[in-house]
Length: 456
Image 1 (cartoon, rainbow, N blue to C red):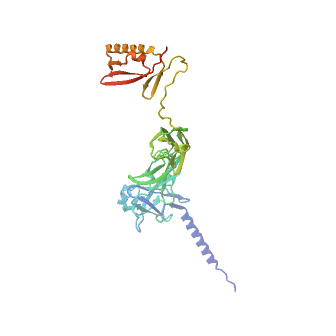
Image 2 (cartoon, one colour):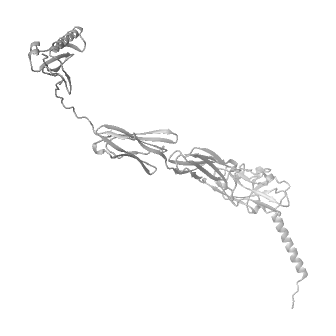
Image 3 (cartoon, rainbow, N blue to C red):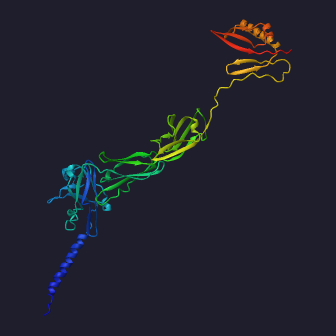
């Protein structure tokens, strides 16, 4: 037995499908897009992104945008430029259209967001006088306001700058919901050129905007604290800090002079110098010889370069010969050093041995005797005949008389005391003479030994 469909039933089903398709077409003819939830900062401003589109049933006045508070009954006004006095108190004087409705932008800005706005559901209606709820259920597309008591911390990212002198790029980025008055970003702890990415305040899905400050510079210190300060609308600040370390670089370490020729017991200075880029914490130089005088200094050569020096006053012993004089420095955890080989020379400071009188072998006649002037450790030997002695004594006496008459400041009396010429001529023994010199307040005596030989 076969079943036959009622032709009337087929017609009813077809009409139902057509009607449902028509309703679907009507529903898809309009669309409004807003974030389902949006966070706003207490005391700051909030922009609720909104856009609309339609394919049929165009509005009579597409520039007329009205915002309402969602309630189960009624249509409390949040924003309506034609009836501003009818706006409810918590939003009165605080709302405005942020977007350009001619570009199908229905975004709303709320200034001076406060805690009473928390949890409010708002929706937009495009030209409510010509587009009815049967065309599009605007009240079904709402955005819930969530009020935050404090702002989010900004995010700091660092690229490069592993060594001092390297190029470093620092970015500080933050999210906000107030393109009406964008946040101000300040970077501290790094110098350089800035670039701010604020291209139309690019929106993201939850209704937030992102703003980024990028700074490019050069690492000038081995350690720095980078701080990012964001000031939101309403003078509300948020801060973030990030520490950054960089390794120092060095160009050379050397000892001057590079030739270590030293004399035993005699002090000599050696200087160890290292060129580096550690401006805040310069390296400390140490020597392998202790208990010796050491002085240190640090000199800035340029903005990114310094020189640290250490000078040792080295006093050698004979045991130091062929040993190493070494200086070392620790820089960025790495130990570097320089050394030279010591060459110790013996000191020649022994006192001179006494000199014996020497006869002149060329004198063939008579006995040769030597006249010696004994002055502490040095001796002057003069060979003279006995006939010259009297002339020498007379000359000395004349000089003394002349100086006495002129009364010199430092010599008052010069008195030669000599033996008689007879004893001088006849004696075979050494003749001794004394010369008295009276200085101011002091008497000095010098002894003269004279050996005489006979020319006959």
